[in-house]
Structures are given as structure tokens and as C-alpha cells.
Image (cartoon, rainbow, N blue to C red):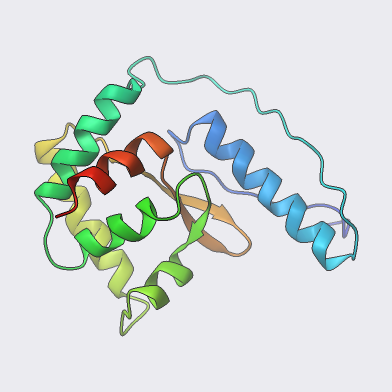
Length: 154
């Protein structure tokens, strides 16, 4: 990077404009905290939303189904994200909170869930994944999905 004010934020294809806005605002808030200031700009992101973007009701139904069909470490991950809705949760934070023994645990878990999502849910996930910010990949679960998972808990 040529300028100390430059930064690179990598968002994977399919990330919603809202997730991109949250990621950029989180970056600016972290920079402001590092610099001892409180100013962080409101960010507006323009992006083409996918035509098949799910309604809140469809997302809630997907989240409930995915949660109920989950086992092993996936269910606790979904619960952790549901307890932290509308907030970027880093892979590192989630891995530590769930007591994963290795940095490879999260990618393995996500790979297994991804295969299930492709076969059972048409490739849809109940949360955004792989939002790159602050040198880590992050998750973002909407309040609609989080509420559905909280209701589905037994």
C-alpha cells in the first residue's frame, strides 16, 4: 500500500451491501480507536443485490432448518452468532469462544456445512461468512436469522 491511510478490505462475492457497510464501518471505528479519536464516518455502500435475495421470513425458515439439522460444532457456532447478531464476529473470536483446538477447525467445520448447504439448502447459508476485516475473516448473522435460532433452541 502506498499510503498509510490506504486499506484493503476483501469481501467475497455474494456479500450483501449491508454486510459490506458494517465491515467498512467496523474498520473505521477500529482506526479511530487506534488514533485516539471518536469520529468514524457513516459509510454508504452501493452494490447490486442478488435477485434471489431471501426475505426475512425465508431466511428465518432457513436458519431454523439449518440449526435443527446441525450437530457437532456447527450448532454451537450458530448459537454463538445468534447471541451476537448484526456484529462482525471474527473466525478467531468464534474459534476461541467455542474452544477449537486448531486454526484448521473452523475451515473444516465450514467446509462440511458448505457441502450440506449446497445439497440441502440450494447453497444458501443462514449467515454471511468470510467477510475480511482487521486481518481476519468474519461472520455476520442478521437479527432475523438470530431470532429464529434463539427460538429453535431447546
